[in-house]
Image (tube, rainbow, N blue to C red; front, top):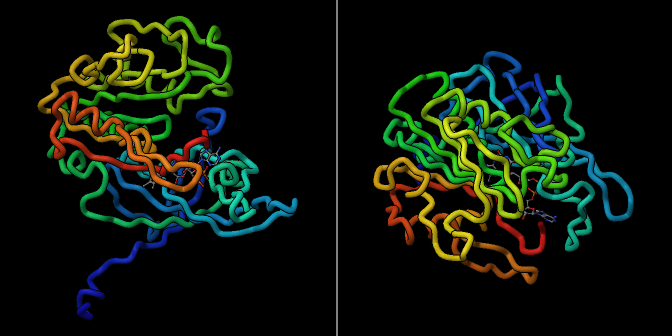
Length: 328
Ligand SMILES: Cc1cc2nc3c(=O)[nH]c(=O)nc-3n(C[C@H](O)[C@H](O)[C@H](O)COP(=O)(O)OP(=O)(O)OC[C@H]3O[C@@H](n4cnc5c(N)ncnc54)[C@H](O)[C@@H]3O)c2cc1C
């Protein structure tokens, strides 16, 4: 490599930001507001980008002790670049106390971060500005008719885009969020039936649920299609609220036949730009089996291309993690 190439390559920059708010989203998820600790720590970012958090966390060991280590994880920016703070939403995938059987150590981040980090704490974060990041075509204004497909953990960049639409008031933007979750509530299904209304946080299972209901009512060019894959009963939605509730997997009818979900609820199949965000299983059916082997299946990406005829250049993806079979 030439020395000049080396000097031109930018390394991710370190920043110090302070937590100014911590809001519970669901039983296992929090949203943090962070502000630069000093003006020099501020950086510009675009819709769809992420930061890497670095935190010193106390985690249990298999022998019953506690170990303090620096742990890093990536988080998509869940607030609009038009605002002077960033919001990050952190969901616990691995349960508190989970010990990796191979190493005998705790290797989770989120459960300990959510437990130990408080308002006022200073957090180190890295920002790595790559050119063709997730949603770069939306950030550049090339794509404005967006059908965003989110798994249970994956709507953060859609929230960033919704806030951006709220601030910019660009009438050409159109966003439909296709949002897949197992259940609305960790409680009995009976407790959630009824018209669209706010749901109590402690038993809520859907990140941003109340916020999404409000924003879909407020912004005419935002629609949310909630699907619940394990719910027997679902809430009812008023027609003009920009909200639809359905059951089962996207692209599947109750009788097992294929559904063209984008055609059914979308704005226009030809012009739709389709970002997909979530686990590998949600995006393209890829999972890691208990013996460590990788199994490839089909996910939203294949469904869009095979059932709806969506071209690869009209898709985009951000994978949060590789799904382990038997983990959830
Ligand atoms: C670019 C990018 C952006 C991201 N943005 C976000 C974001 O905005 N918000 C967010 O919450 N996450 C985001 N993530 C994922 C995030 O980095 C963490 O993986 C996530 O918060 C879960 O952290 P964890 O400590 O619980 O699990 P991790 O230690 O990170 O491990 C996740 C793994 O745990 C496995 N797992 C799940 N359940 C279990 C179980 N019961 N037992 C054992 N293993 C299990 C999963 O299959 C997955 O492979 C992003 C990742 C990337 C790469």
